[in-house]
Image 1 (cartoon, rainbow, N blue to C red):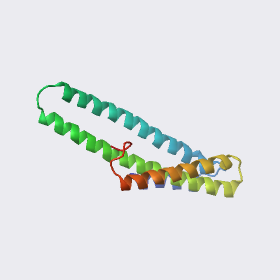
Image 2 (cartoon, one colour):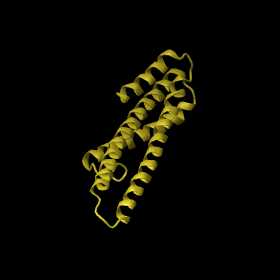
Image 3 (tube, rainbow, N blue to C red):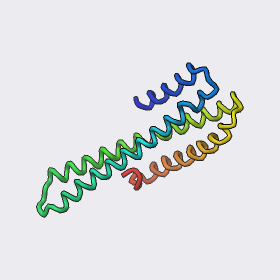
Image 4 (cartoon, rainbow, N blue to C red):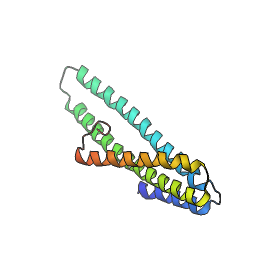
Length: 142
């Protein structure tokens, strides 16, 4: 559902805004927002899991409820990390397409810089997703 929402926001913005900057005005800041959200989410979830794990190991007794909640938190984090990775991949693809169309439509100089940057990012994201498909327990995800 969130993937369709992201796609709809990008398409509607490009269709209804009548500016030469419409091809980068939303797509690049939106990519930055999704990427920054992933970094913040990842940092906060890692801190929470590490604190819970430290608390569990510092207690000298067996606490199955705490262990189960820790494992559940790890699974939830991994699932949301995958959603973020796919969102970043989708937004990178959309941004790259917008940069291609923007350069073709407007001939502005900004697209000469942004098109190769997002082309390389797109290749890197697809390589990351392909590697995660082969080895699903990667360090960035788990």
